[in-house]
Length: 100
Image 1 (cartoon, rainbow, N blue to C red):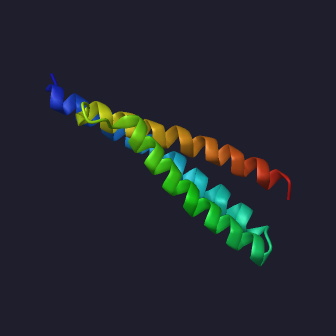
Image 2: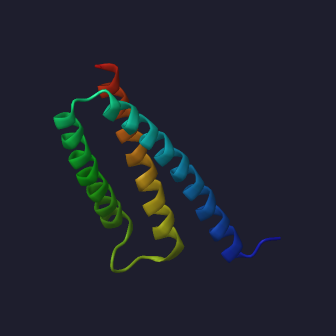
């Protein structure tokens, strides 16, 4: 039988693997879209993506961590938030990709 710490760690590890898969797909779609754009539009996309990453991370931190909470559940909430926002961003970029 696993200890609570092992169960918590395992769950967090699995969530992180799901996030990594979503992030990999996002990067694939991002690079496909970037190849189809003019140099000026590529620069705008790069800026937008950097800004989006900052927003995603700060938004998920805000949603997941409060002064009274923390620990494993907050970490899981943070990873889950990043995963969901990454999946949504991938859908958004795929939609743009279909326009080109």
